[in-house]
Length: 184
Image 1: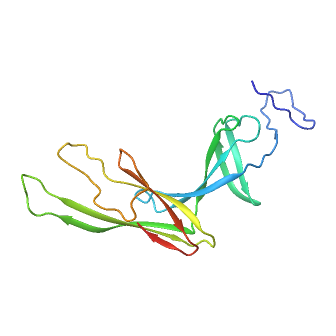
Image 2: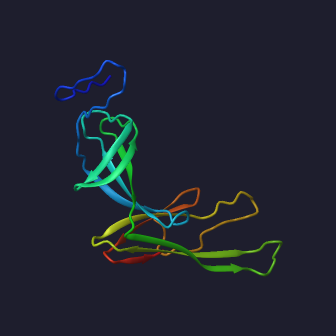
């Protein structure tokens, strides 16, 4: 059980209609990071990660997101225990761009033992139009074959991904200078 003490006096009508009352406001130190999944969208998302240091659990409900007197909007908060980690979406960061384009497609015309080789090359370009350096987490995925006769492999990546999962999800952490650009 959790008990919250509401500061000050508050009138609650006895007619059964729901009422909202602010229990309090709490500032939490946050780590802002940026995430891009260019295979699915050309948007770069601003996200925030923080720890519940309020001394009490955070209940389900809407939360107003404010940083440096700037209102970012509302987010749906899920139940978070004391010292639990919270991750919230702060929307799209328009000043960081990402573009994924096919730069190579080769089809081997020879059929060798009823096999054909098809090669694809993609280039991901990130640009930072902010006045401060940022780090962007970029995720991309190689296709996953559903047939044993079809083999998919990564021949080269520059720079190589920092992580690659069993489902062929590749992750990079890209540091961008102000007005900087990086190609993967």
